[in-house]
Amino acid sequence: MPSLILDITYRSHLQQVTRRVNCHCKPARLMIVSPPMSRCTIMVTALLPLLLNAFTCQNAVADPQMLSLSGVALHYGMVPTVMPTGEWLLRSHTVCLKFEPESRRLVFNGILIWMHDAASQREGRLNISRIDAVSILDPLFRPDRVFVLSQPPTAVLDPGHGGADSGAVGSFTCEKNLTVAIASLVETELSSSGIQVFLTRTNDVSLSLKDRADFARNHKADVFISIHANWAENSNASGLETFLFPASSSSANSESSSGPAFDAANMILAYEIHRLILSETFAEDRGIKRARFDVLRNATCPAILVECGFLSNRAEENALADESYKRKIARGIAAGILSFLSNAGLLR
Ligand SMILES: [Zn+2]
Image (cartoon, rainbow, N blue to C red; front, side, top):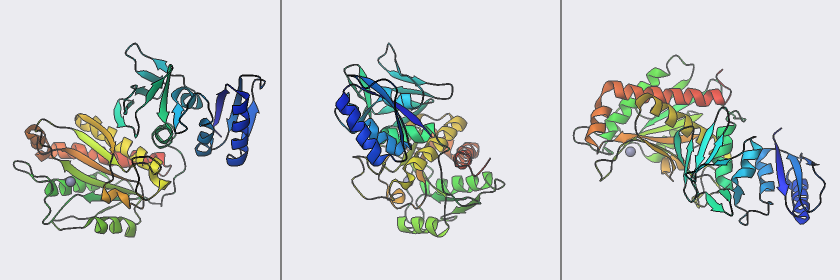
């Protein structure tokens, strides 16, 4: 079981933590490491989602939705260091995280992730939101947490747009054709992997967002990957973006969604696919982002949407039209799915 050491500055807070642990964190073990004088240290052992409730008792953070990065880091056996640039670094033998005060940017092992909330620096401490600790850090630190997936696992690939809906249109390509081509290549990449793969469409037909979600549910998908290409007014914009739905208790998510069941899994799926496409294509990293896309809202399994590149950028359109570049993207998506399922313990 994971454990956490809390520094409690005032005895009243110790009582508060003790009460909360006893009420909400059973089965939990609470051990007073140093005597409960004016300042003491206690160790709490419990399941993390419950345990993080105890973080909020720390007096140093006035806003209960914000957690001290030092406290969170300690939970994973790390100690943050402040760089001369003002950035905060968390490093272990497997991970390196970089936070910027008053910014939503988090760089996790070289991959840009946009947090729900900006990290805030107060009185020499860096605080991050509870929802970012739970929905980003914990899934990436502990990707082997329990998943309930079918065996053999099933991946549904969703080529965006189709029929009358062309999606983004470049100078000589259109999104609806590109997405089918990439999805078909992903299917080929996964053909001998033991994963069942289904495509929501293989030809030029119209599908509603509901059709796509129903398709994934009917095929009992374990992962759902919606494949798109981007477009922007600024013809210089380029690179890869991967989207997941805002975590269920974040301020960015005021609407109902598929609920918290997939928050952690969505993050791992997005991270694995995003980083592995980048490692194949060396495209610009525009980051892992959150958006309330309808196709993700009602997903009945971990679901992400990947924007493979900009058709409004001539150089990137040329690359996307190239068969070998499409295959690189497909290899990245396939490897991301495999890595996600390995983390889930289904592929070893
Ligand atoms: Zn699209």
